[in-house]
Image (cartoon, rainbow, N blue to C red; front, side, top):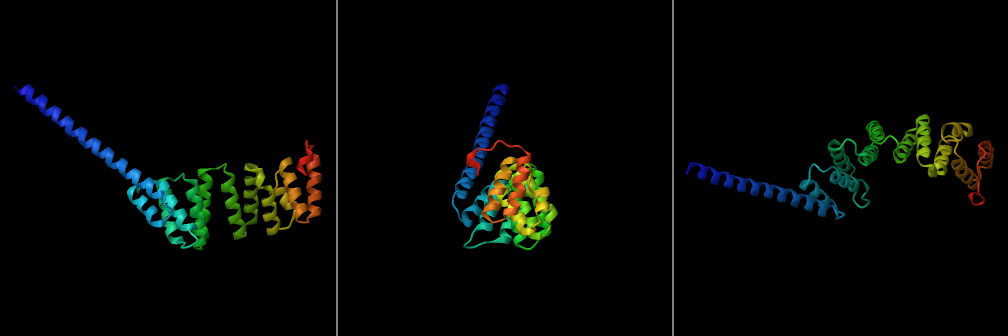
Length: 227
């Protein structure tokens, strides 16, 4: 009789535990679903709701911060900074959140913390051409040309299609042709071709000729359509 009673209690406890477990799973599943639905609506109220439903979801904090930062109708730089800081606290390897946080901090005039955020973005994704590009432009704005040229060089190495734009930005900051060729433009045939095209289009023919001479030294296999 005692054994049967014990078996009944064990089964009852097992059923109760299963019910509580199912309820917990349903509860969190519903929260996740509500959070996901909320983020699909491009407005601050819905995105704030998503962070309340899923406060440990770094993606939701990032989306909220991105919206607050780039909402042209009602920008909220301070709110963006707070949201993006939350995103990187939850996920310290969130590169996009670090980049947006850097932008937000710069808009608030805190260039030192903005630079720290760019450095954290680089540590989280060392080989990213996008990170190097955005950091380089920040350094150009702050006047740190040696560091900016180094980052532009890294950006072009990661994405050679950025060469023409990098040349334009570097030349605008410091029209020292030797410096640009040594510090910014890597010796890659396709890069030289793009720079020559950009220099020619902007009437910087002397520079285009210098780059052409360097291109010939590499003995590239050029196709007719490249010029």
